[in-house]
Image (cartoon, rainbow over all chains, first blue to last red):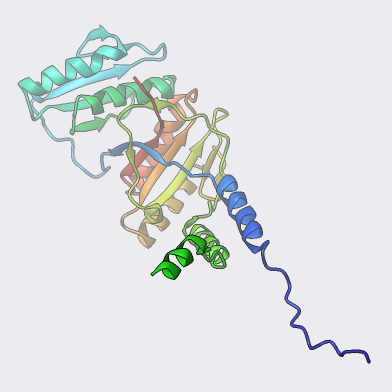
Length: 134
Length: 141
């Protein structure tokens, strides 16, 4: 007599579910790029302010020309020295305003270099000056 | 007492691993939810290096302007022809109206000339979007 097989519970082997989940996870981990948006913060001067009469003692002028030379208060300085010089000037005058002007041919990298130096010197009052009409 | 000791040496305990896929799925769902997808592709730009860089507070308040080496300008998903910079002013002003806490992130190529950057900054000033972030990569020195 054939013994009838008792009804078996047929289960799909789910042992590999963990592997599939790991694979998906690794794919996302590898494919995700972390978008870094960091940079130097600045507030541009508004257009509607009147030209205020500021005491000349409280302004330092920095001009960068096309060749990347930096003129700080009519002295040619190296970009690396700007931070140190500004720091001394701010120590003498905490209300110092630094006015940064470039020419149209200046390289952006030099501009950022000088701005970085100003930030290192913890200058808070940075003003971007309009370029001279050539 | 003797029987108990015998039992202990023969006892084998298996840690139930049936819930491992559940844990992995939870991790996966966490990553899928926290990943923010970049909306705009922008231009190919080599950012300059700077040391004193700060993180932008929240991505929601940020609009990005790309300026590449060939002086092309792109803001978010709109390309601006160099001759019609006044469009930039209108677009920036619109965005400012929608979000008063707007910060403009300028991604300018390090070899770009300041002329175009100055023009863009003038337009941003006229649009009153004064908060600006110069994107840069962290430098060691």
